[in-house]
Image 1 (tube, rainbow, N blue to C red):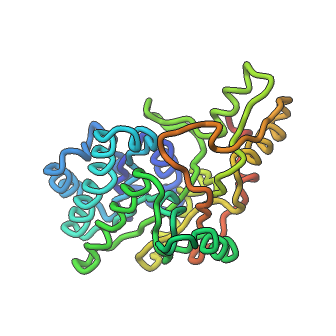
Image 2: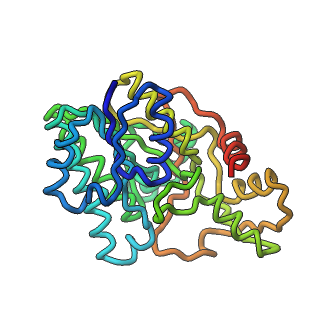
Length: 305
């Protein structure tokens, strides 16, 4: 059976990939955490991966401090190193070892001025909304530095296509699910809402930024399904069905949990943040079977926490 090397194995998604891989017959799983492979040590990336000689490399590691990346130049440099430069070396390692590389990207590569002409952004976004969101082959258009760093990572892999890189770029959005083992694992939106509701009678939630939630066990399963089904190499979008804004997601969460709390819908400007967020970054899925709704996935998650 295929030997799978999972980078970022202690995180939320990495943990779910390990858990679900055996269900699909992949029983040689090599989990790498930060101590096993430092993505900032470019010289060691190819050599350490070559010692493993994996059939598949799955990279879940990433820099995702969106606001720090926007506010501080040193953080932006760090984002570029992890989300772009390191990804280039992972691609080179995959070529050297004849491995398949799976790399995760973000809906934040979209959401900006989609045709790069003054005054037409609203009309262009309307077109994408009518088409069900941004498709895999649509032109990226990030609105913040984090999204730009993720786009650069994609571009580094695309540059290696002519050198026979076998790759899957998987764009996803708004992850939630069981926490990983790493102390660096971040709370999801739903985790944060539940924590805030414990000592508050009311809460304000942004009534904007339409995108799709993604349940990490579902993301892991469909990733493994892509590999086991030997899908064509390229870019894929994976997210649970049904877009939602933050406010509607909070309402659904508290309804499911029978939590009585007042939810105030507010604009994004009510929560000033260094990084601009896309008002619309729905990922259309044109290549894979649709996953279940985010509401159904959320219901499962709440039963298990």
